[in-house]
Image (cartoon, rainbow, N blue to C red; front, side):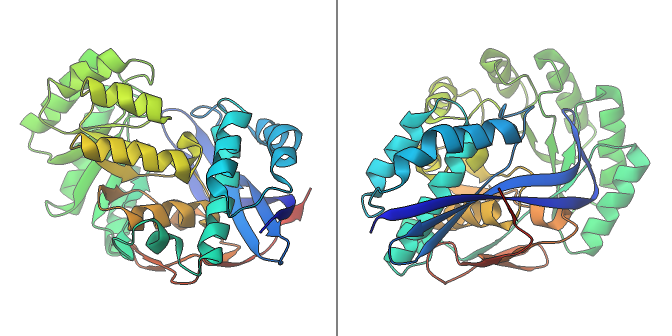
Amino acid sequence: MKITSIEIGKLTIPLIKPFKTALRVLSVSETYVIKVTLENGMVGWGAASPTAVITGDTLGSIRGALTEVLIPQLVGADVENYESILTKINAGVVRNSSARAALDMAVYDLVGKLHNAPLYKFLGGHKNSFETDITVSVNSPKEMADDARKFVVDKFSTLKLKVGIDSTVDIQRVKGIREAVGPSIKIRLDANQGWTAKEAIRVITKMEDMGLAIELVEQPVKAHDIDGLKYVTDRVLTPILADESVFSPEDAFRVLQIRAADIINIKLMKAGGIYNALKINAMAETCGVECMIGCMIENKIGIAAAAHLAGAKKNITRMDLDAPFLLAHEPVEGGISFDGPRIILSDAPGLGITAVHTLEAL
């Protein structure tokens, strides 16, 4: 079944509250949406979210990679030969992982539809629902504690706290939140590369000694500092999660080879889509390392693709797919639904996306 057209549109969605990390502040989500149409009229959806400070991708670079290189190579290709198409996507441009991810998820959406199976079942079918954590943006200790209380009232049992701007204040932030939410709530920390290796060891050890019960610490050091990541992992009791240090299967191999982290965070916008994410997870599982599935500030198309991957594989044990809860409105219908923090996968074929509203044609 051949691809007859690939269209691009743009979704712009304000956030309920500015999203603040050690790397950036974001008030609006801007995403390119990909619509791939087959000769029988069947449609596959994908999306690319720019995160310049992490992936290097901007709206302009995503659009250029898609329109100038990738889309011309794929029109006319037979989607039933999807291994060939996915290979072309990954060989067509280096880096540009968000652009590749958008086309990748649209192809997988179509493959699921052609086989009349929801994508999570096509890829493995391990589970059809799970709970996500929710992110507390980095702010003053009091504001973060107030936000944490509200999320617990909304029945979230796992909080991911953004830290990494000032290590001394970070300890105060975590202490205040632990006191605010009590001992039963899981707390994860994400430093977004904000600490040095020695600083990370000092801060994490201090929090261990204070009994703050941190489930894991995500990316405490710079992305390129794999030796520093291992240095931290080897010297603290708290599990260390590699995020920005792992984009590709090759990155994952290096981290796994020297056991530089205890867990790997897979994001489709980093990996270039599901095709490479499957490779990363398989390598990690072979090495006895569990994975988390994460996201950028995305709409429900990208979150649905990530959620279907998470549902497919038992080695993906932690979920950080909270972006839809941060958006002021959601123009995408279908794919997944929510029951508080629980994400429920659609049993419709493919990703199960049924409509995309307020899409600005380009």
